Length: 408
Length: 144
Image (cartoon, rainbow over all chains, first blue to last red; front, side, top):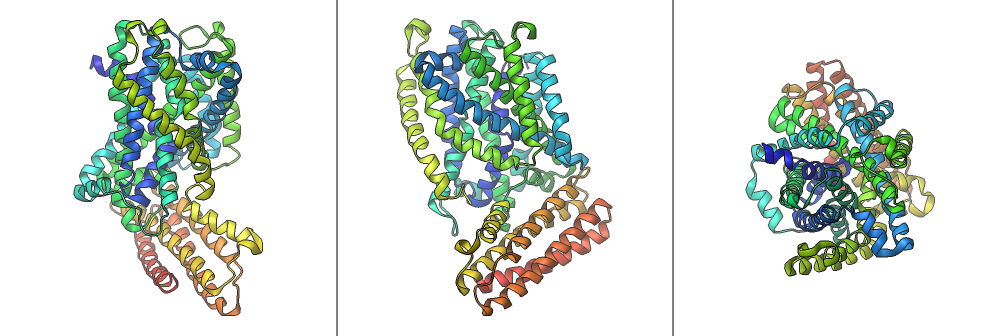
């Protein structure tokens, strides 16, 4: 139990990062359209985020400097400012979608239109950030988000293992779908798994939790348990859609459809679990993105930041967080489609990945910062392969988005 | 669903450049609309099934059905806004338009029944939707 509590930062980051509103719908849509044929993209994404989140957490633990601090130092102020602009914009879109996602989750059980609930949710997000301790926040929402495991139980209940395994190990592009669309979805899933706010949040969280070199084992456990767990939940969502939706030709475009398989397979209890899980996951993602907005701006400008100091000691950090939440709520109540917003933010984040991950790789190899904890050869080789992959993905993202009309 | 509806809407709003210019293209658009509506009905059918078996909670099924109705309305409106390229396409338009209208009406009835917790009526609408789905599949098969 103590270990479980210690890895809640990783679980919270992964739940909020992997299974936010956009990921849930993207995974379900992938399953409905391509079966398990994009499993490999999720696995590639999980390995990539484990690799770079571990590096960023290790760097933050040893140097007390989170990712964006390093981005500015290594890329220079001008390049880092461009990265800040892109990251902040993508993060803001995601925050908008998550606040709307929480409201939609509440709508599913209350029938109150989600647009009326958005201001209330925004207020709740701010209150939690303002009042609740970082560790308490991550434990409550990280662990509640684990209720989404009910979707894995639903997969087990449905059976069809042979179909799922065959679809995962023999990926094909179904009739009626184009190869560019297939790769567009692959990029979306990779972007969802490796979205930059995960490392901003995770590395800042390591500083918030005051990890020391003695906590490096906890840091690794967080990464190597938390993130694969997020990946497993993504695959469970994809699998339920493969079994239930693909044979019926159903396309997924609503959050409610993510919950439906749990109800079909497990009845009311399954539905209750999945709805609480969706609420917790979207709320966790709203907290992560709101905090990440403050983290990135404050770290870029060198302001005092974090929840580990009193709000009066980090006023500009909290101001950025509050303004971001208010603006996201205002954008949300314009009835902009939150699913589309987050799908675009995922894809756009794929285009910005190298700018975030390159400085992490450089610093984690610098003995002046890392001492004996610099990357090993295997880590460097794998990280270099990923960096090349991310460059290819970054170059291909926008043309594929235009060419496929965003996967239409 | 929204993607297809948006694509159809884009066709409708995009003036002559994106309007189908041949009978075949129009038939293809009609088949796509029929396919999209079948998918919406299938989702609604699953919702009705869990409501009938008391596997739902709170207002989950009514909300699910309201979304299905919204998607169905978007599909119908988008198809209705498409200009048939030649007079011989009018038959396809009026035939499919009528079925899409029936589907939307049934989805509305399903949502109303679910909100009233009227399970018997909901089951009856479920059967009607099944028949409409079969009719749409026939159209899709014929035109696709």
